[in-house]
Image (cartoon, rainbow over all chains, first blue to last red; front, side, top):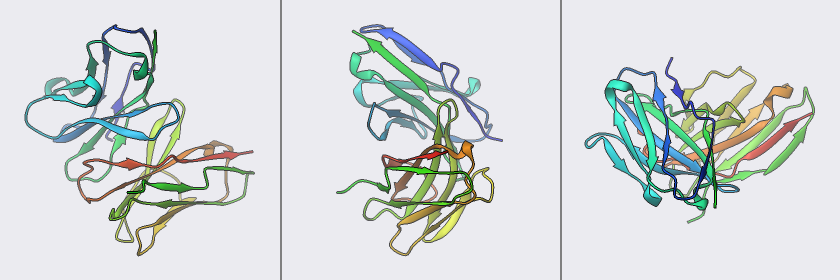
Length: 113
Length: 114
C-alpha cells in the first residue's frame, strides 16, 4: 500500500538556521507531491507542489523542495528559518490515476528567536 | 469568497453514541474529502465525494460513513463511537476531480469521545 514517511517528528531550530525536512514515499509509479503547512491556530495550506518538470520546486515564504525519483524522496528545505515558520509540516503524495492524497505523520518545527 | 466551513467546531460525545459532522465547501467546489488528524498519525484519508458519489474510501471501519448533497455540502457520520475516534476531523474541498492539485481545508471539528 502507498505510504509516506516523515522521519523527523519534531525539529527545533534557532532563527537563521537552515532547514531540511525529510519525506519518503513508497509508491513506484508516477506521483504528484505536496507539502502542506499548518501554522498554530490556522488551516492547513499548500506550501508547494510537484507534478512534473524541474524537480526543484519553489513555494511560498522561501521554501523549496527537491524531487529525487531514485530515492523516492521529496525533502523540504529553507536556507534560513524565521520564528514565523514555527508550524507543523505535512508531506503528501497522490499517485497518478487515483484521487487519494496520502499524508505523512507530520513534522513539528519550532523556531526560537 | 468564503472558505471551507465545518460545523460544529467542538463536540463531546460518549462511547456508543453517534455523531454527524458537516462541511460546506468553497462555492463552486464539487469535490469534498474528509481526513482524520491525530497526534502521531498525521492525516488519514477517510473518503472523497464528487457530485454526490463516493469516489474513494480509506481504510476505516464501516462505522464511518458520509454523503454529499446536490449543493456539494457534505456530512460525515460516525456510529457507535469509540474512545479512539477522538480526533480532529478535517474537510477539504477542491474545484477539480481526479487531480488533487490543491486542497482547501476547513478548521476542522474537534471530536472528543469520553
